[in-house]
Amino acid sequence: MRAGRANRAGRSDRSNSGVLATSESADRFQRSSELRDEGAPSARSATTAESQRPARSLKGRALAYLSRREYSRAELSRKLIPFTDDADALEALLDSLVRDGWLSDARFAESVIHRRAARLGTTRIVSELRRHAVGDTLIEEVNAQLRETELARARAVWRKKYGELPTSSAERARQARFLAARGFSMAIIGKILKGVDDDWAEN
Image (tube, rainbow, N blue to C red; front, side):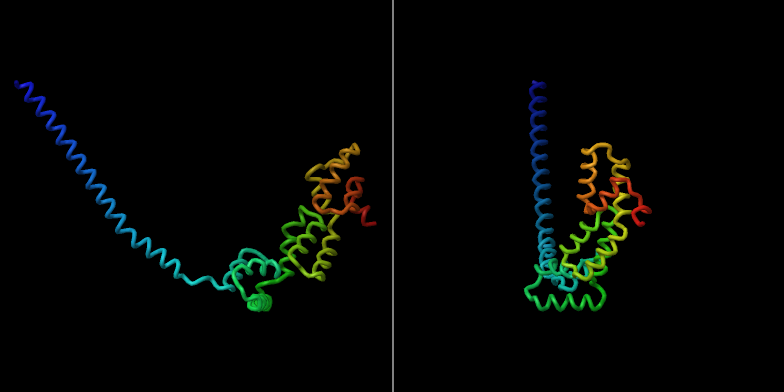
C-alpha cells in the first residue's frame, strides 16, 4: 500500500513539474512577443527616417566620386547621368567643377599614366584615354611623352617576364605576342628581341 501511494505521489510530482515547465515556456513566449512588439515601432521609425533623408545632390555625388580618384569629364558625366533628367544642369555642373579645379582631363591622363606606364605600352594607354573621351590634343601630348620611354619600359616588362632572348622562332613569337598584348609597338618589340640596348637604339 505504501509503495502504491509513493508511486502515485511520484506521478503527481512529475505531472506538476510538466505543468510548471509548460507555464514557464508560455510566459517566456509572451515576454518575447511583447519585446518584439515594443521594438517594431522603433524599426518602423528608423525606416521612415531613412526614407525622409534628403537625397544627395548631384554636386555632392560628383565630389564623392572625385574624392576617390581622378575622372575625365566624359567619364564623370556618364556616372552622373542616371541621377538627373536635366542635361543642361549636368553640363553646367561639369563646367563649374572644371572651373574650380575639381575636374581635370589633364590630371586624369596623368593618373592613368602613373598607374599603367610601368606595365603597359603606349598603344594600350592611349586607347584607355580615348575610351574616356580625353581630347585629341592632350592625347597627342601623352603619346609623345610615352614614346620617349617606350623602349625602356618595354625592356623592363620583358626582363621581368623572360630575361633571356628567344632561342627558337616559336619562343620568339611567344615573347612578341606577350609584349604586343601589353600595347608595345612592333618596332620596340623587334629591338628588344634582337638584343638592341638603349644606347645603341638612341644612336
